[in-house]
Length: 249
Ligand code: SAM
Image (cartoon, rainbow, N blue to C red; front, side):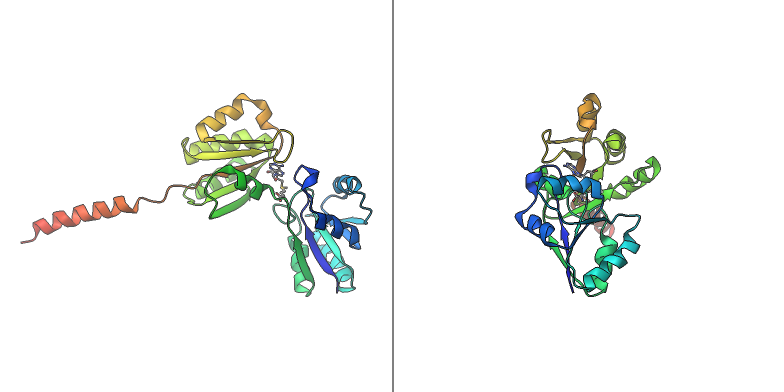
């Protein structure tokens, strides 16, 4: 049986591909790519001539079966997406699952991932965190999700499309409060890489006032909500108890 390699590719700077990723992409029988035309540029840049086949959200289940058959027949395959780590807000889940269910070895080749890159440089607590992918595209769904996230105490991250960034920041300011700190991590590893850490009021105004900030790719890293004030609750309980004790004969 062959191996399915899940290979991370760069999120901007092509030098971020690992030597091992290049070696595997050169040596496998076939590369399953989210968009073969998009990935052709990467392959061309590194002089890789391995055949590619499309494996994306719309054909993944059927394609998965055929790819698993090839793995079972002994071929090694690589799975890549347009950028970063496959399966992270990208296709690949069905293929990986089908391969594992068929008893095929699945091996990750770690590398670039926008949310981890953003978190690593954001300067917000990173000991525990949550990734929320893309928020729903429509306003109602997005606001609902933000309500659910408002009390999340861990640092959390979302991916956002540039044309929705401002709307999203405005909703966040309203629902999470203008004081909540957010880091906008934009165009990571690229020429115009920007990381800006500011309270939501300031961040939304800054993005509104500078249309350059409304372009390119971005991750939002959001400071968690403060822990509920347990001390305040117990202080109140103590006060009540105290008052009651005084009432006792
Ligand atoms: N699989 C990718 C990963 O490992 O990060 C994510 C794919 S998802 C379809 C694309 C989103 O990732 C973009 O909309 C943006 O939110 C984020 N992203 C990708 N590259 C980025 C970069 N260079 N800087 C900031 N965000 C990026």
